[in-house]
Image (tube, rainbow, N blue to C red; front, side, top):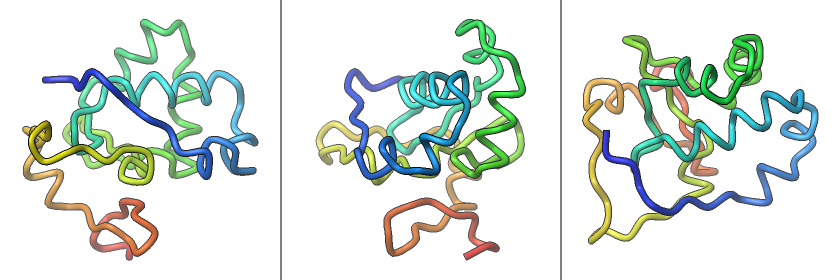
Length: 119
């Protein structure tokens, strides 16, 4: 998977009560997962990232339960607030190789991803 070289984080998300209420390991994992995601905010190695960060899987489960991450099946994970955090110029954008899973997503008015069937 081609990873981007730069990532940004929105204060609106990182300083939100919802994010600050996450356990510290879940916060650290969320940041690391953002660095691993492709230009559409998708990745297929969330468990591996959890392991190499030395974080227990319960932090990953917490991020899914609190909907900071969306499970798209086939081991593909979506960073829900990706489009709020990152704007990638067209000349630098590389479409996700997870086309099928990307097609399962809709973008809400606030620029957060949601599953098409859960709008």
